[in-house]
Structures are given as C-alpha cells and as structure tokens.
Image (tube, rainbow, N blue to C red; front, side):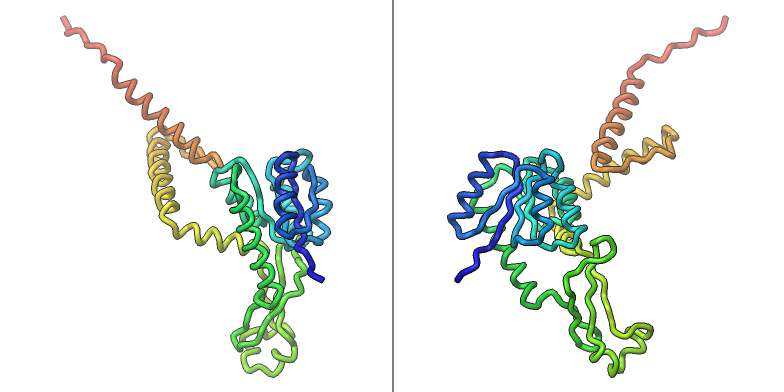
Length: 265
C-alpha cells in the first residue's frame, strides 16, 4: 500500500486553506490543517508530518514564533512559509529561524507544488544517508537527529571502532573516545544566505547601503553625534531619512541671507 506524504497547513484564511487542501489532496497528499499558531504548533511538534506549510500572520501566535519553537523542540520537518510581506528582511528572518523555503502571496499553486516536491526530494535524500560527515580518515559520521543545546544543534558522531585504531586520533580527537562534529540546525538557512550573497542583486543592495552609511557617518562627524547608533531591520531606512533631512536643512540654511555689516562711522 502506498503511503501518502502528510502535509500540515497552518493558515488562518479559510478560503486559501480550503483551496490548498483541495489541490494537495488531488495531488496525492494527506492533508491536515490548523487555523491559528498555537494549534499549528501543537500538531507540528509531534513530528508526524513530511511537510509543513506555515503562514506568517497568524492569530494567537505568529508563524515566526511557531517555526522557532518547532525547531527548538528538535522537529526537522521541512517548513515552507507563506506571507503577504515580500520584504527581503522578512524572508531572511524566517530562514534564520529554521524555515526551509519562502513563498510570497499571491502565488500560483503550480509554484507551490513545485516547491513542496523539491522539499520532499531533499528530505528523502537526507533520510537515505546523505545527511552525513566524513572525518579526515575517511570514516563516516552520523547523527540520530536528536537536537541538543536548546534544540539548535545536531551532533554527528563517528564509531568508536573506527576511531580507536585510527592513526589520526591523537590529532583528531585526543581527549574523546570518538570524533564528533556539532552542526547548527540553521545551517541550511546560512547556506542559502551565502548563495544570496553571490548574486548581483545583493551586490547592488550592498553598494547602495554603503553609500547611505557613508553619508550618515559623515553627518555624524559634522554634527558630533558620535554615540548615535542605528540597529534593527529599519536601520537603513532610518539612516536614509536622517541623512536626507540633515542635508536638506544644510541646503536651506544656505538660502538664509547673511546680514551685511554696516560700515563703521
């Protein structure tokens, strides 16, 4: 008997939830749904699903918090996040919290299906043994999938039978019975961020941000606001607004006529 892939849809919009359920069911998926973040977390934390489709803007608990808590509990089920907010910073936050993919509303169901199929292929590849490391001696390190350190790290361990007779052990793991390698569960998101950093769009964005930051630093030096710092997702926007405001004020100040001094009599 064929086992259908199980998908959990966490979406508060009833129309979209019904549409996705019908489409996925017709494509051969076993679908379960949740209407809010807390109900979605309760089901997702069981680890009984092959895929999770998670909306960001949810009642009672937003999608970012749900994703963070799911990963903290050691659940490695692939998560595809849905949102109407298409800003890059939102995508980066979701990926860093443990999401595997991101789709901006409105979207075509064909694209959604293609992304889900890709996530399933990636998950299947990990389950057949690709989720491994190799030590300098060529031996394989495996993980049980149990997360440690508050649920954010997986440990890959070598076999003691491989390590004990190995000539590299005095340099590789002299104080441990076998080699182990910690790996963050967010490493996939970091790999994606590294790929984004190689794109032309990232280079343009970085160059434009650098121009704003240089102008802002120049104004700080002129106005002697050395301790002023801007951080957070809106930091670049705040820098731009402050820099533009200061520049405009300086230009307006130049328009004020300088009073002429009367000659001494």
